[in-house]
Length: 338
Image (tube, rainbow, N blue to C red; front, side, top):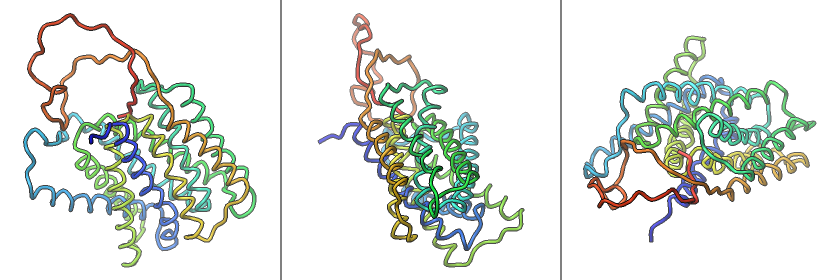
C-alpha cells in the first residue's frame, strides 16, 4: 500500500520535531558545564560526524543509477553558505543564549515562533500559498509566545532571553526556506555539509574567544545529542520539506516545543503554571489549524530541468507523449512546502 506524499511528509516532519524538541531541555542541563558557543559547535559537530558515519555505511552498497540522489553542485554554494550562517551559527548560538535566561518550559514554548516566521517568509519572499486558516494559526502561535513574556515568578523570562530566542527562530526560518530550495538534492549530503560547516565555524569562534572544550562526559553527551537533534532530525526535516513545502513543514515542526516543554517538567523539575497552560492552548490551537489547513487554486508548472531521486514511471517518462491538445489549467488541491 503506497503512502501519499502528504502523509509521508507529515510523519517525517513530526519525527524530526520530536527529536529536536527534546534537545532544548537536555541542552539546558549541559550548559552549566559549557558555554553557549562551544555547546552549539559540539551539537552540530555531533550531527555532522554521525551523518558522515552513515554516509560511509551507505557507500558500502551502490544504488541503481536511476535511484541515486542528486549531488550538490557549485551553483548551490551561495544557498549552502546562507544555510550554514543562519541555521548553523546564528540560530543555535541565540537559542543557547536564550536558554541561559529563560526556564526550559518557557524557552521550549518560545521556539514556536519558528513556524510563523517560516510561513511569513515562505509567503512573502518565496511565493508559497497559505489560506486564511493558516494566517489565523500563525497569529495564535505568536499570541501564545507573547503570553510567555507576561509571566511572573519562576517561569518568567527576561526581555533579552525572549529576543534571543525570537532571533534564533527568525534565523531558522531563513534556513528553512533556503533549505527548501535545495530539498531535491541528497538530504544526507546536504545536512552533513551544513552540520560540519556550521560546527567547524562555531568551534573556531569559540576557541578564538578563549573557550575550552568541556570534560569527557559532557563532550560525549553533547555529540550524541547533536547526532539525534541536529543530524537525524534535520535529515528527516529535509525530506519533509521536499514532500510538503516550507510553509506546511513549519506546521509539523511547530510541535517540537511542546515535546520540549513536556520533557522539561520531569527532567528539570519545573512546573506548568496557568499562563503556561494558556500559552500551550493558544499554540496548540494554532498548530491544529496549520495541520488542517488546505488550499485549492489553479496550479501550473513551468517547464524545467529536474534533478532529484526518481524512477522512470509514467510521471517521469523522458519519452515525448502522444500529440494532444494542451489541457487548460484546472483547480487542484495542493499541499507543498519544499
